Image 1 (cartoon, rainbow, N blue to C red):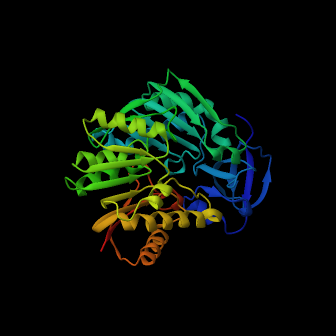
Image 2 (cartoon, rainbow, N blue to C red):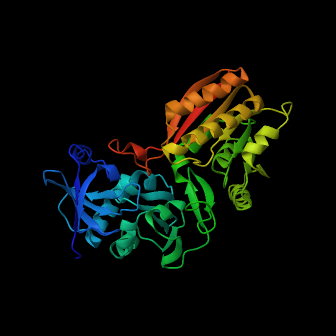
Image 3 (cartoon, helix red, strand yellow):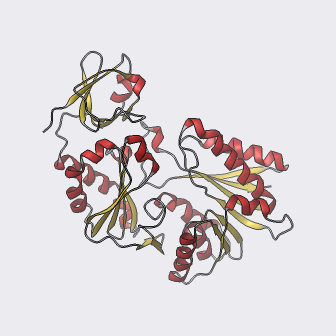
Length: 391
């Protein structure tokens, strides 16, 4: 076991760690000793009280990520315990027949920097921190074993790796990972393009909202699904009898959405287009929709770029409203912690005001339970969906 470095916090900064917050910012560190980037450190208060064991990376926005508050070894057995606990928290989803599940959600499952999605026994893992990268010899075998994986693909190609000083990496860690896997979600069948698709291939976080849409849509409703990706919302609406148009800029996404429709013996139309440009160019005298789904990508993940996300949401809502029937519903989703429910509502209110109409808030949905959100770590609660009705 390599020698563990030490990190001391500035006075008063230890309280949030004792309250189970997992990150330490650069400005909260008083002193370091014997540290190396990616190594393990003992976290200490200014009075030398031990606060836990963490990974350290001087290059990162959050140099310290807490692994445990306990005095324990960080080895294969540590990860086996963490993985077993996380998998048991998803027992309800597994029992309900869902075969596409986020099995590990980084800090929210007490394995900071590690994300795992499982699609019908095929795992797709993302390593988002240098500390977790250097611990890979301890977590790969327990991951395969605890989650019973047929294959394991590492798909660590996200932009955030650069902030940690890491290169992009896509490689098989176990078995022969397929290009895609077929899963069941809310009784519907979906193909998850795990190699070539976005992120890990399928967005499990919107499972609850998609089920709710199917319950709310009426047979014969016209629905426009912008940023449809592989048809998650679109297929749930089609299953309820809606006439659906799915719009996305990625050909692979629409090809997969069409395959998904065939899998479920459902029909829907698709259109390859930039959703922003499509809504803006749509003639105002075109036939209006009963439903419009706006589920754009994150766009902003930092406080400094939050205004660009607000502008994007305003633009989408502003250009969608003329194409929504009176009494029609608009689902506006944001998947960035930096834009909370209140700010999203305010942005929608401004867009509606600029269009001279009123929107009622009917419902709010959040990410599903396989994306847990400890209240001690508010950053974990990133996804919100506002269900708005045009008066």
